[in-house]
Image (spheres, rainbow, N blue to C red):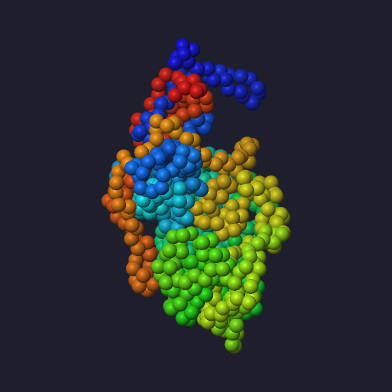
Length: 588
């Protein structure tokens, strides 16, 4: 190190008045990359953004290193730009809690999850698992780590051991913020805003919080007691909840602002189920998916008969189809306009549906529903020649009327999307698109009205639960920036490539048979709405967690580092970070 950099490094800070003030950097952190578990804790608390995620390259040049195809250097470089953390919409660093589990440190794993996620048991069951899609163990060697199942078990452990106490929110900002809608997006926005110190009131039109989790997510995927206890825990720390409030009508947005609320987050969801406008869609036995699922969840008497067709190929369609089987249907088919390889539902959702005996008719669209005495009896389908979008961005299809098929039905369920209440949005004074969607800024969640932000299915149109929560988090941070007089720009996680000396050689990794997650046998599963996925056992999860390749670790950008040491103080893994002589930018 040059003599000049052995001395304290001067950092000149510019204050609002333009005056320069000089601080002396007395120390710099060093990272033990071998011990770092890439949990993201220090990265989140760093005041200057000096901490960054590094991703190791993985050697795939020779077949002796690991099974599978050889990778050329360019492919390895592209792979090193991906990570499970970068894939998580709400900011988890899964590698951290996976490696805590591998050590048997369930309390440490819980602290990492709880710091990020107000609904860990919910996402431990119904998250769309984008992190597992990016898991390099699955891409290169055997199977992805079961990150979602691990999160579920961490949450269960915390509740069993009394660790999941009510969230405590500090109220150190004398400003009130309203959140409209108590689903996952609204809950996340409210929890984040309360943790920032704001006084938060949640307005819910229904009789209780929960949103679509309460109305439509089937119990075989998410038992009610799981989301109920997590909502209660998140809201019981001082967040006020007002149910039966139809914001936009009583009270109006103007009344909320006049009442002293400085900002409003709209997370009212897409609450209107849709049917296709085809002959017969109004017959008895024809439902939209939202009404169908809500009727089943509320216990209303609903006879589906022996033969059911679900129109749609997404996640809601698979839920509706599996629900129909549990209501006594003997034959259930999904019909979607996409070809089989392009079905919108995730691969594992289709695998679960097929395992229960649900059929798929891909590349077809319904022409009409026929009946006698206004009761659905058959649905006529035509082959889809082309899928395109109209000027408003809506999907349209061109059909081959000469290639048709007719299926006998007792019940038809349209799972073709949900709509927002465009008329209500206009009454609020909010701008909408030609298709009736809310006009908003996707980067800041701001709407056309100052101080009004939006989140969840209101803007995502049936995104996954984790995406809804992510949009709630974006809205909360935008509100905080707005009320603080700052600009807000959402930062996408972007890992850097680690130097070559950090390269991973798969031949040296621990060999283990990947865990196969247990589930109810099909006959038993279809006999009730009991949860299908079963816990695999904590010892087995600890064993499987050791398959983690530890692709990532954190490093310090010394150009940005102040030498404050907060990274070392907050590291949950011990002496991964140590403070030493100050380092100038460019040195390591």
